Length: 353
Image (cartoon, rainbow, N blue to C red; front, side):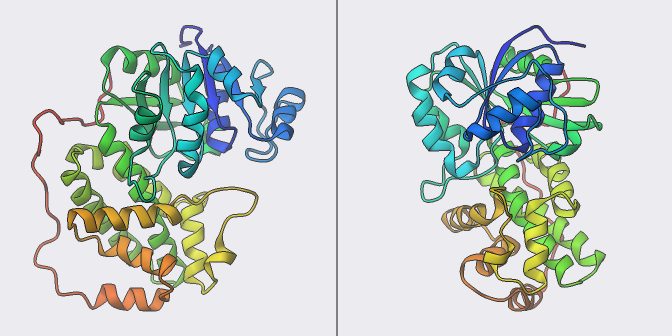
């Protein structure tokens, strides 16, 4: 079913931004992509391709592109923000002059800002003076598979019911199933933490520790995600849904995962510098590891897997040392803590409406 025709701007022409731009056009919307590189813009307009970030995927001829950020913001009602998390504040500042209270910003970026430890929604709210309505789209979605129209599902978190319904109609399709939530905090934390756990899973695979070890890492990763999420106001149900377990399983096992691939190379003995993705692709877990480590210390939450990844990436310990530390920890008394709702207003399982 096609959505009503909306003017949508996609901020960022990476793989995920391009895949969703394609989806939104095919759903009947008018879409303009903001490209950092003039070459990418020309490729989209002339060849109907994004050879740099999503090669060999044909794009709709009606997909527009521009290198003028102000133009894209001005022309759009809905803005889909798909820039690497560490560029979020810079981009938000540049958008500010054109933003009104009629805008809706849908955040795709998965990360927590270093030093400030702000969630992406907090950055946009702060830099855009709380003018636009905010939503977060996250879940187990590799860009290439969505662009190939393979069946996928994700979750959209939005506090405003009317805005959430509008966005769901715009993105939802026969091949892209979009669930609803109101838990912006939980969805964003899950999206950031899973990248760090995915690096740990990749390290285990690179060290050839076996499938048992990978499964244990994923399970304990969910426990760490839930612990931090609970004290920061996220709903426990969120971490068991699309943006939690779903995204973690995909990213921690999928061969298309940049974070898992980076971890695998680390586990094989390569240095971090040699593991970083080529061509501008971003493994968000490298930066996220710092922010999550600082959040765990701030809230006095035990997150041994995330701590081990942080130490490998940023303190120079070897993967073998990190593994030894994890295995030599005190014997566990119980498998997992389940947290009651800390706030009666945050009951937010993935909801289909």
